[in-house]
Structure formats: C-alpha cells, structure tokens
Amino acid sequence: MARIVRFHEFGGPDVLKIEGLELPDPKQGEVRISVKAVGLNRADALWRLNQYIDVPKLPSKLGYDAAGTVEAIGPGVENVAVGDRILTFPAFSQGDYGVYGEAAIVPANAIWPWPEKLSAAEAACVGVQYTTVYFALKTMGQVGAGDTVLLTAATGGVGFAGIEVAKQLGASVIATTRKQAKAAALLEAGADHVIITDEEDLATRVQEITDGKGVKMVFDPIAGQSIPTLLDCLAISGRYVLYGILDQADPVLPAMSVLAKNISLHGYTVFAYTGYPQMGMPQQTEAVAEAREFLLPRLADGQLKPVVSETFPLEDVVAAHQSLESNQQTGKIVLQVS
Image 1 (tube, rainbow, N blue to C red):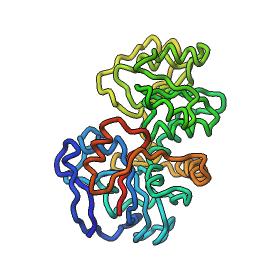
Image 2 (cartoon, one colour; image 1 turned 30 degrees about the vertical axis):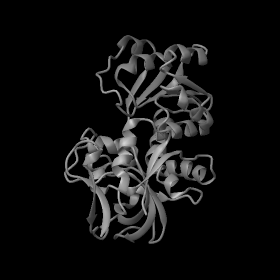
Image 3 (spheres, rainbow, N blue to C red; image 1 turned 60 degrees about the vertical axis):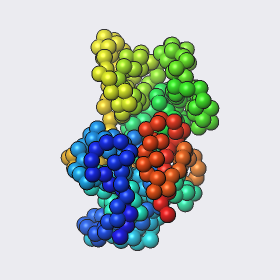
Image 4 (tube, rainbow, N blue to C red; image 1 turned 60 degrees about the horizontal axis):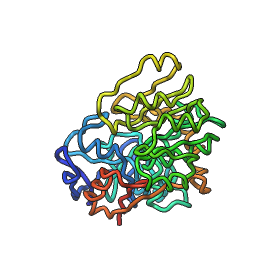
C-alpha cells in the first residue's frame, strides 16, 4: 500500500487527496519506482483544473517530475535495472502515470539516470523544465552563438532552465519579471539583462539592448494581450514560441507586423518530441537521445543547476499547490517524500 495523491473532482488545491493504493506490477515497457521527491509544474495545476491539453478521467493521478529508485521492471525493459536511481521526464499522461506519491509506475522510455551531483529535490526539477527548454531553444528556435533570446515570466523553473541552456548554446539572454525583487535572482542565474515589466516598457528596452535589431527568439508562457508587444521585440525572421497561457484573454495578432518582419509563430508542447501516446504523439527517440546527451553531462558537472524555490512534505500537497498558484516562487516547488 502506497500513499498516492489523486483528485475526484476538478477544482482548487483542496481537491487533492492522499489515498492508500496498491500499485500493480509494471506491465510491458513499464517500471515501478519508489519516489523520493516530486517537482511541481504549472501543468499539474492545469490538469487539476481540467484546463490542460488532455481531459482527465476521474479519479485522476497527477504529476510528471519525480526522482527515485527502481523497484520493479516490466517485460521488455532493458534500459534500467532494479535499484537504479532515476528521474522522470514528461512522456506520458498524468492520469495514467502520475508521480505524486510514495510510488509510481511510469513508462521506461520516460526515465533518465539521476545524476549523482543532484539532490533528490534537484533531480525532481530536471524532467519537464530542461526538456521543454532544450527542444524549444535548440530544435525549434535554432538558437546558437551570438543570438539573443527573450524569456518572459522567467522566474519559474522553465525560465531559470532557459537562461542556463541558452547560455550553454552561446546566446545572450534577456529575462523579464514583473517585480524588481526577483531581478537579482535572474542575473545571478546568468541572464545578461533583466526587464521589470511593471516599471519599464518592454519593447523599448529590448530595442535599446539589441541596438534596434530585436531578438531572434521569444520564448513565452504568457500569451494573451502581451503578444503584440512581444512580436515587436523580434528581429527580422524572428521566432515567437508559445508554451503556455498564463493570460487567457483572447490575443490580438498584428498581422502586418508578422508579414513585414517575416515572423514565425509556433505553438509548442514538449510532447511533440518526448511523446504522448494518448494523444497520438510518438516519442522522437533520436531527438530525446540528443537532449539526454546535451543535458545529463551538464547536470552532472554543475554547468546546469536546478533552482529549488521551496519544499513541502507530501502531506502538505495542498499547501504546495497553493504556493504554486501564488506565482511568488523563484525556481521550482518540490514535494519531499519520506
């Protein structure tokens, strides 16, 4: 019997309940893990609210990011053995394979080795944020040496990972945050410039920083009413990559600006690369292997360092989700599992 977090109705954090469940033996291509830590993501809250890209079947598990050890392996699993320390990355449905709890069953193609240099809390911050950033910047954005990237709402886990990965690719980074209080953390993480959007005009500052050229790529989780301003920040043939909808207001698309500057607009989900079989997206195994070869050595030697904002015991999962939705964190929120 393992303590597992599930919800039986959609709603706020209070719908999350810890229940005792017997997990079955892993099936073909699956592994069962003993969970040490769970990393929280914005997608978890959207899933709980039924505002995600897929519809949960109630009662539902939740969560993508975990660090733990392998307890059992199913038929056909060859990439890990019982006792291996691993971390998970998003390549499955939260409802089918949610990782909030003392144990979880996940697909074997959704796990990587847990780098020894990382604590359990740090390892639980790797999967979603670093794969999301890698495929967005390297594969979609084609970011390289000498380019400039604009990262909006950059004080979450993906934002900090975006700064690190962009710098590893040789790019300069402009990061945004609404409040001055978080600027120092972004600069410490490696951002070349920080724009305080409550105090400064974003497009004007970007043009000043880039000597009027604009940025090659905008990586944005906000959308909504900010889209016209963000498109103004792009260089000729720049790329706007949208990976979230923090502002759910209907956006206005300035079509003439898009045409005149030859801008590319991309809706992006990491599952296009890592896979989401329940929605007909197969894993791009070569792309995932390339991401692993780029990310794991850098995590192992400290070039990439996950930022943990706050930790909660599993018993306080409701409080953890309340903190997640407060938008006050600087980094990622983690559940510690005893």
